[in-house]
Amino acid sequence: MILAIDIGNTNIVLGGIEENQLKFVARIATNAVKTEDEYATKIKSILALHKVDNKSVKGAIISSVVPPLNSIMKKAVNIVYGVDAIMVGPGIKTGINIQCDNPSTVGADLICACVASHHIYGSPSLVIDMGTATKMMVMDDKGTFIGVSIIPGVGIGLKALASGTAQLPQISLEAPKSVIGKNTADCMRSGVVFGNASLIDGMIERFNEEMGQELPIIATGGLSSTIIPHCKHNITFDEHLLLKGLKILYDKNYK
Image (cartoon, rainbow, N blue to C red; front, side):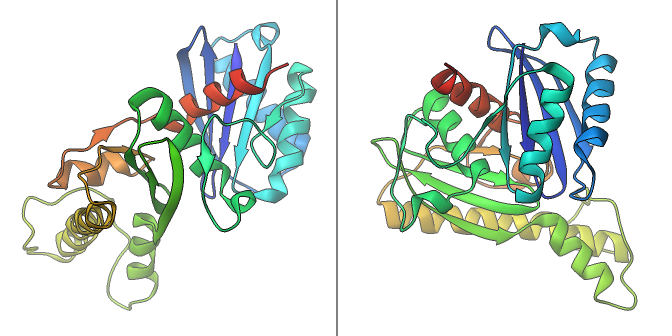
């Protein structure tokens, strides 16, 4: 089994992949002050919960947008499984070209999503990753990553509404029955869910106009399942796109 780890700003996603099949997915909260021993304990407990034998883990790969956790997570994996995890970053073989002002600054999460999209769905494409931030990435017809738009995430907007106002409460994130809210919670849900869906639709139109074609669209990320169904465009949802990208990268770089 290969352990794929995606370290995000809010959550760390763990995936166990065996014979190109995703055997389990688990999430833990990101905490940059925890030590390698604490993360080792968490990882070991989670895999035990999914009945994964320690000896079955033969390799690991990590993508991260939280630099302080990079070495900590590598050490944690080594403590538990005795393997040296591959880190997604400059110098790694991706199988795609990156056409940006400074390719080395492109986030590991963006690389994983685009690698998976290119190899699984083909290019060109527009890849949407809705996590702490909403990222919209473009791959051209040659499979080249040509750029990205980064938008404040759905959760960030929702928290800002509640924390930055005196009378708006914290609410659960779900679509209301109508865009016209009749109570405070539904008014907020309408703005956050339908507002973000409209934002995505509007950005898709701008991307298509600039590219001169209708791009196939693939969406992933923890909040996509809430927002994407309310978009007007045809969008393929792949919940575990980043983990699939990590496995593709592992296969390209394992020696």
